[in-house]
Image 1: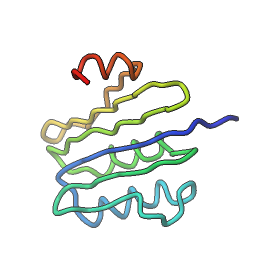
Image 2: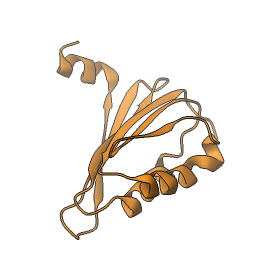
Image 3: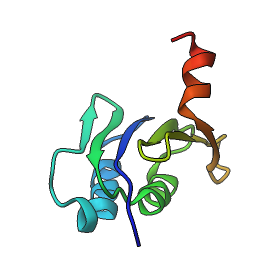
Length: 115
């Protein structure tokens, strides 16, 4: 299996230390205890660069751990394929939260945002 150079940025809220712990456990096998995860108030932030990020495991942990009305997004930038995959999470009340995902070329993203 080959891995691409990637960057991951995310913000999810509301979050607390229990959400932080669950997400940390989901990623610790692949990422170790490096400072890739941070809780700022009630916002859980991910800031990571490298070769492999366990996207599926982290998204699954977030889906289970976020409280009612939890929301946020995770952006996965594949710098070799030159794509951005955005995973957006929303939960409405007590319903199960869901992720919607879309991948776009980074050139398209830059043109759309005016950069």
